[in-house]
Amino acid sequence: MTDPKAFTCPTCGASLDVAGKYGNVPCPYCGNNITIEKPPIGLDDLAAEQNALVSNMMQSAMDMQSRQAAVASNVIKTTMPVVVGSTIVLPIVIGAIILFTTVCIIGMVLVTTGLSLSSMFH
Image 1 (cartoon, rainbow, N blue to C red):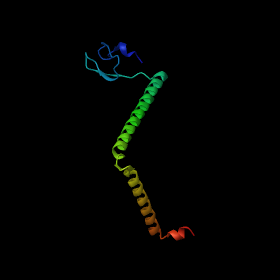
Image 2 (image 1 turned 90 degrees about the horizontal axis):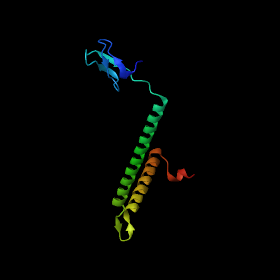
Image 3 (image 1 turned 60 degrees about the vertical axis):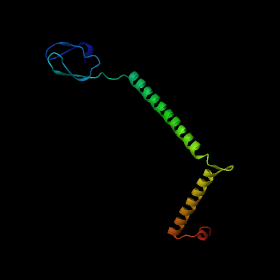
Image 4 (image 1 turned 45 degrees about the horizontal axis):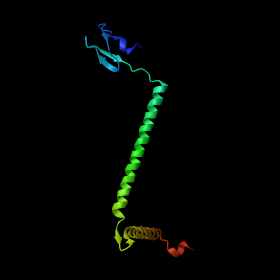
């Protein structure tokens, strides 16, 4: 492959400066489209690109983790201060809802399968 910096148009023979250009490049003198191939990438270039990608991914993951921590902190700040006297009500209410839901689900499973609590322990 020829050096893309010292390229000549195959149609008109004009000397062309196509440094940094790849793909179909039109000749500014005759308009002929010239295909300039991108040089193959070396292993050092691939390693540098891979390191940059990994670094960007790690930075994105750390950014997302800090945003999630900020959201969680805001949720805690806005939902936890429900206080009646000296008792925090919200965790108790959430625990009661979870317990009630669990009991209902177990009850529905028992009813639909035809089992009873006494038959489970015999």
